[in-house]
Image 1: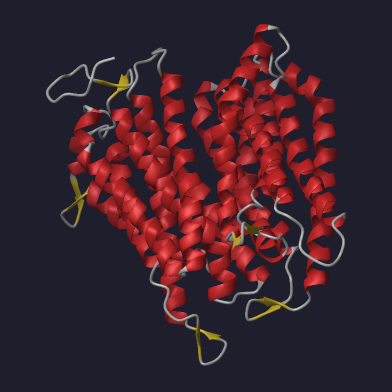
Image 2: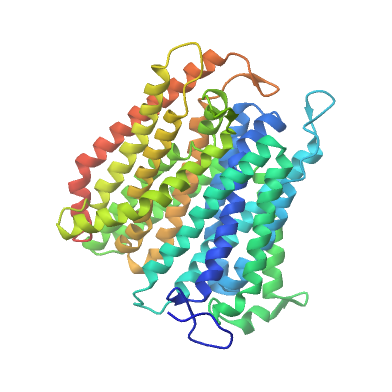
Length: 511
């Protein structure tokens, strides 16, 4: 491994291309800003703007759903025109503006309980900027990492492992720091710190572009700079069009039902397109693999719809029901969002070793079985939480251990599904439409986040000015919902396990 010194073309970063350190740091700060804001969002909606639980859950769901849709658009624009480097720069700028906009909180109410529409519109516009910024940055920063390695480079998987460590470091630190600042000293401090984090990421990326050594440039620079309308180049028109897109998203985030309808409609169209292609354009083996991939995508929606209760209903659950006292200090509820990243950081290497060892013995679970185990664990997480709270009895709040356990089980479930999901898409999809199938995967994740908000609305408590009117009834309701979704997940997991031999047969030798 060589050290990093100016002027050398063969420098490496811990044995990897130098550009990896720039991507690592940029993504770390982007995830710092995103998860820091996300940890506070449901509390900001219910405790600052005083939305009802139901309204807050739907806004949160529309926001997170669009965060998963926009990278598809940003990826297409980068692949065809901008190149990943320019797309990441533009996305980071939008993110900085959006996060600092969130820090401009203003008064919570005007004239008693009437919301200030002016500050509320700033809030919605900030969400739209963040959604669009993530769309340009998230997919393309990963593309840059991949472009740093030649085809067949054995360092590629290790490089992505280092890169994803940055994601979890950023998510872990931000949930602690932004959550603590926002709920202790004021929303503007928490959101402001998230904005500062994203600003760091932008500065790092701008200053380190030379280390990318020409990777991730536009596919056709001449075509990008060509003037095509009113003397404006194609690149400038893309940026202007994206600003118009921000305005469209600004309106969509305020009309959550429309977001849901668009997701369901586009999902139906994509499913019909996949089935049509599989039956009329594929060989029998290709058709079986495509149908198996589609089935697993549907099951992944169930997993993520339950897993994504973390930032919405579970956040309010921690705030209202759980005893968060530790050595005389009450831990802000938003800080528990760091548990997922902490457990991933701790357990991901162990799962990687486990799968390798099972594979060498010929007993590694197939992809459908891993999906089944994931759904089982997300269901057991809810059931363990309900068991712990239900057996606690009256006279006080239950301890934090039950909250820690649900996050632990959900994280182990995630490690059984998330790392293999994208790999499954690339392996089972026909090469001619693998891009479309990737888009379907992200669209399914978006739909799952919206469905998660609908599930969360079932846990809604009656509030006035952010205060729960009947805590006992609210607790009973959320426990009933968690019991139902827990057993539903267990049932789905058992069903998937039973049909896993059929799905594995449809994979035709692909593990």
